[in-house]
Length: 284
Image (cartoon, rainbow, N blue to C red):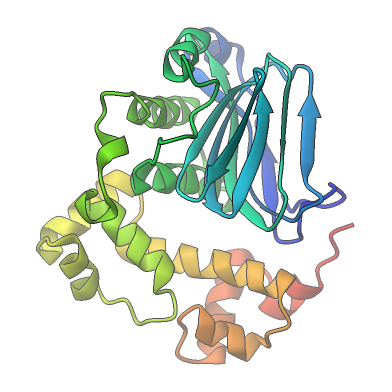
C-alpha cells in the first residue's frame, strides 16, 4: 500500500496492515504493521503507548530517538528495538530511509527486555549483519508483491532477527569483510544495481562455487539470486519514478536494464502497470 498524507513521509514509501489470528496472538510472534519509508525532516512520531514493539533497520540517514529518558541516534546499518508500550518519540532531521515492523507475541516483552537492558534501545555500538536487512526486506517485499505470507513464516522471521541481536551472537563485532557470504552479496547487489550482475560475479563475491552459492542464497533469502536482483531493481525504480525527474529511459539504465523496452516489460509484468502509469498514479 503506497503511503500518503503522513507528514514527512515521501512518496514512494509503502506500508502494510496485517490482520492477526487468535492462534497467532496465543502462540506466535506476529506482525501487525510493516513498511519501507523514505522521509525528510518533517517526519516525527510521538506516542504515549502503541501496544506493540517496534523493530527498525536504518538504510540511509539517521533516526533521532527520545526514549526512557535517553536520547539516541541510530545510523545506517543499525537496528532499533523500542518497547512502544512506553512513551517514545522518534524523528528525522534530514533524509532518512528505513524498514520498520510493529511486532508482538508470546514472551516478546521478556526477550525485548533482555535485548535492551542497560541501553533503552539497540542503537549505540550495535552494528548488525546485512542478513537482518535482507530478512526484513524479504518479508516486506512479500507483502508488497501480494505473496502469501503465513503466520508461522512471520514468526520464524521475527524470531531469527531478534536472535541475531543477542549480545553473544557475534554479529556486532563482524566487519563488512567478515560478514556472511549472503550478506556480502546482498550489500554488493544494492550498490551495483546498474551493473549486469552475473551469477558468476555474485558467487565470486560470496567466495563460493556457483552451485553452492545459489543454494545458500535461496535458503537464506527465499529468492533465487536472479529473483532478488529483479525485485531490488524494480523497487529502486519505483522510488525513482516517484521521487526524481529522471526519464523512464534514464531510470531503466540506473537500475540495470539494457534497454528501455526491456525495463518497461519487466516492470509491467511484475507491478501490473507500466512505469509511466505508476509515475502518474495518484497518491491521494
